[in-house]
Length: 313
Image (tube, rainbow, N blue to C red):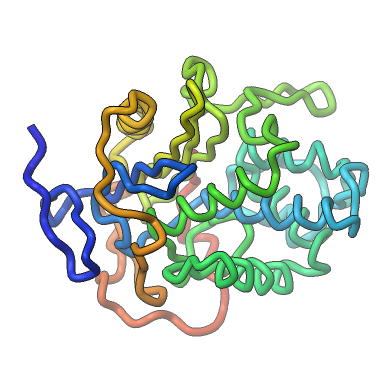
């Protein structure tokens, strides 16, 4: 049985939760009505949910005619140096943009994400600046991007509310590229890469999805589904494992598509503060001591790659 709703200062009723609860959010995509929420504006590390923004910006560039799906994406030294998960091809390898985007979404390839950013923005730094500008334009007030792939950096933060806003943008702007966000596999140079997201295999109403994991974030997912004329978006952050993430996402989608969930607020009035230090689950997930949640944002420089355990989206 759910706990009774509690009233937040923002004037939004949300389901009562414990202080240690992981963030989640269920939204009706047509109206923006919030159907279920828990810690929806709590600052969190996005991990590979970052790649939703990378894909969104890239598709905007394609739709504006700045490049095409046949544009060559060349793997630079910086790209191939990224930590896993990665495609793992040599420097100088060239991919069609369409294939690169698909590999990024299916394999969650960090090396390919950086190569795409360089192809679109000229450099990853310029692309990240565009990511942050687009986040501001969309009203993602609690989000800050530092890289294009989601490898852990203390400064890279978001929240469930902002990820729902981003998913709404993906759905609204890129309906012609829907398959990109639900592709089960891709074969590149004789290698078949499979998407590990179980919902793609067995959730018939699934429309778009991206998962993410780093030690600091736990298991994240942003997913949309459509059924009977109803479209919903579920965001789950910080699940303890992939199975729990899948289960919670499925339960949220089922509840939203059933049409029985009553609105408890609206996405337009749920606002996050400016980006704050994110919760850090490294001690729980990987036996590492992370910084205190209240620690000041680190200024300058990339996160040390050697300190980042391999992500498992």
